[in-house]
Amino acid sequence: MASWNVLHRVHDENWGSDIATRWPDEAARIAAVTAWIAERPEQVIALQEVSGDQLASLRSALSDKDIHALRYPRVPRPRNGTTPLQDPTEHLVLVLDEPGREIAAESFENDPGNGALAVETAGVVIVTPT
Image 1: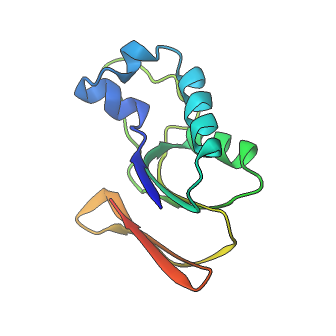
Image 2 (image 1 turned 45 degrees about the vertical axis):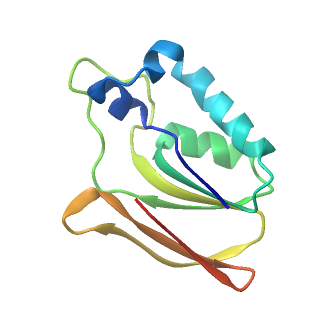
């Protein structure tokens, strides 16, 4: 299993990370993240801060994987200007090699930008919180 916070573009820009500087073209970064995940050998990959654009890229490119997502009720908003994202929603994602069955997907009552996603796959329950 692997876990990775891919850093939603709006969070990067709002909190001053260097991702936007290193990857000024968000579409290119999304493609690179998807390509990296496609090459990973892990059977389960948990991803945090996945934008709607990134989720669409994963679903398109990884059609051989079973992808589960929790969409948070909060949508990140840029403090300054606009975002290059077509779909700025934010998700918690599990990418599975084997088919899985979602057991639960809930955002936390006290923080609509965090939550937990639980999926059963191959007789194992995977729970990924943020």
